[in-house]
Length: 122
Length: 113
Image (cartoon, each protein chain N blue to C red):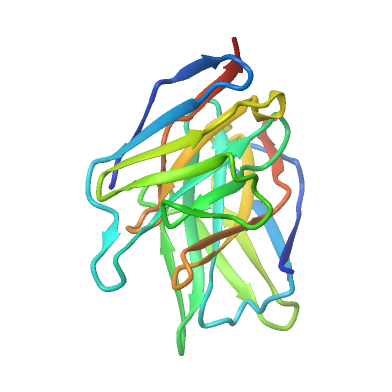
């Protein structure tokens, strides 16, 4: 059974960097069948996909256009986890952030991490 | 981007009655190679992450009660709850994961009449 466990601070100052980590158990971040995604949810923007990392003979990333200039998603094979970094945050980045596995070949989306409420405030 | 539009925005149904939620995509999410629709349905209760109910438009996730069913193909999809239970009160979302970026509907709030 696959489980995703999120960690990271719940408060970030404006203009600073939001950093979250998602630890994977029951699967490998290097799996050729999965992509590892970050999605956020806020009252104003709803559910918004931010980006993903995946391994298909080499590592690749895809990012949402809305955050492409500010986002980095990195795998960490030594710890079997992946991370989200979002630079230059503003109060508009206040949201609940989720990590999610997608197995496109099996059509399966999940599991989801437990969610982290990140508030951007001074 | 593929735009997902749900209807209605909110719905009140009596216990034991049928609830139907619709989701329309601005482009087809049917992958021709495997004839699968990359469309998922979720249930979300306050303070919890979305819970996967249906994937591939009509495949029920393990452990999900069989009163939940998904149907449709191409651009038009439906989530049906055949006999509403009190614990089904929640917000329901559709998601397409056919294209980049993945996109979600705005949500449908389901209540008891």
